[in-house]
Length: 322
Ligand SMILES: Nc1ncnc2c1ncn2[C@@H]1O[C@H](COP(=O)(O)OP(=O)(O)OP(=O)(O)O)[C@@H](O)[C@H]1O
Ligand SMILES: [Mg+2]
Image (cartoon, rainbow, N blue to C red; front, side, top):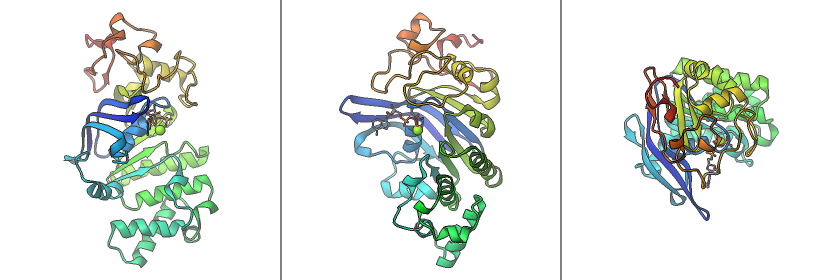
């Protein structure tokens, strides 16, 4: 569905180039949920925004390739990108308030989206919008349709946003921490919703989270990011039962990756370095309990093992388990 090859997303800032995403490659396959996991600041959202074409072109340096059904997205003119966004690739953001204009009812905003992307009559548009509000579990959908964003709780608004994205039935859904702001029951509902969508409609989902519990619940495969790079790829069961990269092992031991920027994880000493001062060599080496001398100056390549998993770590240079 989507193939990302050697993608770099750098920000031009006063402090120099911020290498938020630095040479990552992955593919999102048809009909799967792929989770991208890692600590705060490791580049998950920047990856999503790059795929969606939402980064400011003058303030960023983008290199590499993003293919969507074999079409190269980074070369698209803004107008063509806008059509793909929403219709073909939908995105759910962490903060629902930012997706709405406080001055208009949510129904009005849903109709605007349908008007831009479909040829449906007003009547049919309204039916479709209300249908999707019901689909995401919103009671009294007709009444909610006519309400303003501030009349709804965060969890409710989050579901409206999800309905607004799903009603276009995108082929790919990118969900960036869609449940972080929700309480546990609603979180479970939303996860169920996304899972069903993937099962029933065959939607491919890129699911971004720092929560390993959520990964276990929803994903087929998982990629672990650290400091702008993907350090490990595998199926959920491989990564959870036989983690390879010392960072992944640390994450699983710490279990809860959640936390504020700059907070130390129980089993990984130190902090994620800031994106304009990444260390030479393997970016994890200052925190790594199994560091080798070469890790300080040589960046490890992605090493494919016999099974489907890959790891970027010198410990696996000879291919055997370390
Ligand atoms: N517009 C920007 N200009 C400069 N630096 C940025 C910009 N947006 C993000 N960054 C930096 O890029 C790095 C990656 O940020 P990103 O938002 O992708 O992290 P994340 O993995 O999504 O973290 P979180 O879990 O907190 O959402 C961070 O160091 C961040 O400070
Ligand atoms: Mg983020």
